[in-house]
Image 1 (tube, rainbow over the protein chains, first blue to last red):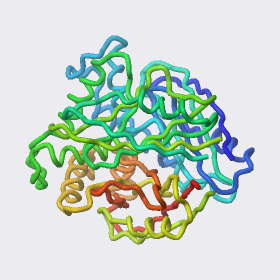
Image 2 (image 1 turned 90 degrees about the vertical axis):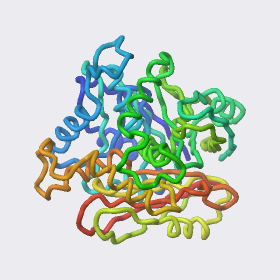
Image 3 (image 1 turned 45 degrees about the horizontal axis):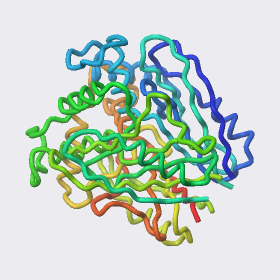
Length: 138
Length: 138
Length: 138
C-alpha cells in the first residue's frame, strides 16, 4: 500500500520549524502497520532534518554553527542575484538534505524519544514550502 | 510493484553532471503512478545530490565551497595512497551522501521546479560510476 | 513484502563500527529478490554512513576531520548540559544523517565493493544504540 500527501508550510524566514505533528497525523490516518515514511521538500534552499526536540538551545546552536560554516555574503560566491543568503541557502540545503525516511512500526512513526522532524528554512525571508509525505508498507 | 535499473556514467573528473533526464526516462517507461524513486551510487568517492538547475554558477560556487571545506592535500589526512584528492573524495561523499529518494506523483518525478539530480564526481581523474535506480509504488 | 527488525549495538564511545554483516544477515534470511534496505538510527547523537571499508586510516582521518569541523567545547555552543561533546554530537549526526537506503539486487545487498555500513557514535562515552532495518520489495 502506498499513500501520498503534500503539506504546505509558510516559513518566517531562516530557522527551524517542528513539523513532527503534521507528519504524525498523516501516519495516524493511514492503515499501515509496518513500513516507511518518506519526506521530501520540493525546494533547493530549505531542508529536512531530524534534531533533538527538547532543548530549543540545540536549534539556536545549530543555526549559529551553520552561519559560521556557510557565511552569508561570503566573497567566495558568485551566485548572489537574489541576495547574500542565496548561495549559502543552496549549500546549507545540500549539506543537510531534502529527503528523509524513517520506519513506521505498529502503525506509529518509530522516531527516537528525542527525534523531532524539522523543516529548516535557509533563506532570510519567509517562503511557502511544499513537503510531500509518502507512506508505504502493509 | 518494484522496478530496478542500473545506469553507468563516465565522469570527466571532479565536478557535477546533471543526470535528471536519464532518471526521468526510467520513470516514464514504468507504470507507477504513486511511489518513490530511490537512487544509489555504488562508490565511496562520488555522491548524488539535488541542486539548483538553472544557473551553472551555483555548481561552480558549490565546488569552490567544498574545495575550501575539504582541501586536497590537507596534512590532516594519512590516507593518501591514491593521491591528494583520495581522502577528500571520501569525506565529500559522506557529507553529501550516496543515496537519494524523491516521490513519484501522477506517474512523474515530483521534483521541485529548480531541483536537478546531479552525480558529483569527487576524484580529480575520470571514473566510471554505477547508479542504481529503484522505483516502487502502484 | 515488508520486513522489519531492530538491532541493538553497544558502542565503545566516539568512533565508527562496521555493522555491514549484521545488516547482510537480515537480508539473507529474507526472501526479497529486488528491493530496498532502509536503515534508521533512533538517536540524535549517532549516525549511519557508508564509508570505505578496506583501509582503517580512512575512518581515523574522517574522525579527525569531523573533530576539526565541529570541535568539542566550541565556545559557540550554549547546549553543554551533558558535556563538551553534547552539541557537537548533534551537529555531527545532522551532517552525516540518521537514515540510509541502498538497493537489494538478486537477493543480496547491492553495496559497492568498497562500501561498508558504519554506525558512527559521536558521544565520547559508550551508548546503547538501536538501528531499525526495513526491507521491502518482491
